[in-house]
Image (cartoon, rainbow, N blue to C red; front, side, top):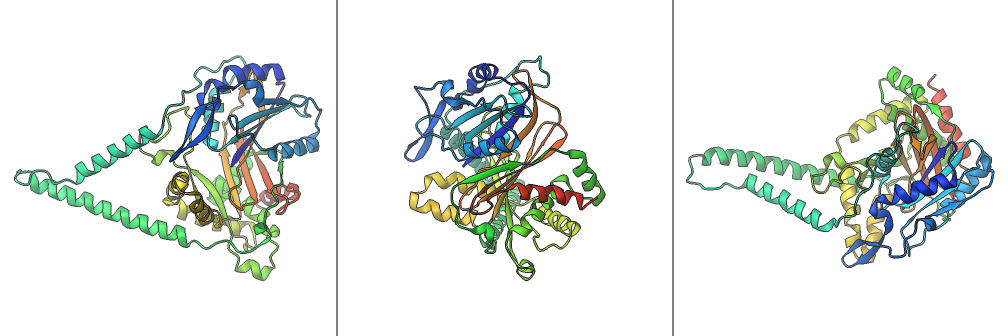
Length: 435
């Protein structure tokens, strides 16, 4: 469960980045901590031996594009040590096309949106501008969560209580309470319905993407494509840019399932898509602005791999995403995973299987800033994220928009896809089918 980020930063040197790392990055206290288990939960503990130098390696090789992709793949397969904070940077300042800065970070530190928020604060819009507000202390969370839950429950009880039955306002209060009780029953019924749908969602059909994994991964990324190309197609078809992006992924996955046309007609294929749920979280539990956190749920989007044309795949994806737009599925998935650490070891595997057997790929859409940003005074020309692969899912697809351009990235286990480059080519080729 490790997030990988690559930034192409024009002119970034090792000396510049060391200064950036020691002043700005570790201003977030969490990055100086390591997670430790103290029953019944995990806690952050400051590493007394922490030094920023241990979290940066510099490679002076003059990598060309292919060599850089192989070098990044090797870093993806390098385990992070458990005896110090679980994050690390690698810098290749002499890579062809500009310096490559790679970050690997365990998902317990932050989700993708939290990291985007951190980089937004650290990377201003001008090379002459310094980060103005940055850093955050690491505060105990368990007590804050318990207090927030207690306040929420107390307010609910107060709203549903009938108070003094001899009061002249009793009838009005009773009517209001009955209305609130009705809403509570309705919400409970909907929760049961949504949970039932989540549990009975069929698992994906057996395919070449469901092979036992080898644990060795390769990653690749595409050349940038103009965001206007996707925007034009979305406008012409009355869909969203996200629908177009998912259609490109569905087209690339279709030939890699190893299924005959007849088998494709009956095939079930889902993509696990992370969804931000911060807007739906109560105050006190939702992370503060600039605070790292994990606030994402997962929706399982059916992909129309049996679709015969680009337009059919696009419109069927539109139908599925509209159905899931108001679903409680992301909140349910977040709740299940949030409680997983409280379960005994024997109970975690069934829970993981329940969630991750429902998909053959993870697809993440990462919205970056519309304008170019600068890190340590150097222009960031490209951004690339690779999503973590969970359970037995061996294929992760990332779609990153930044500064008016879109890039596809893929990380795949060797058992599922030895060379992901053709997959990326098919993603971009599908875009041309709409022209």
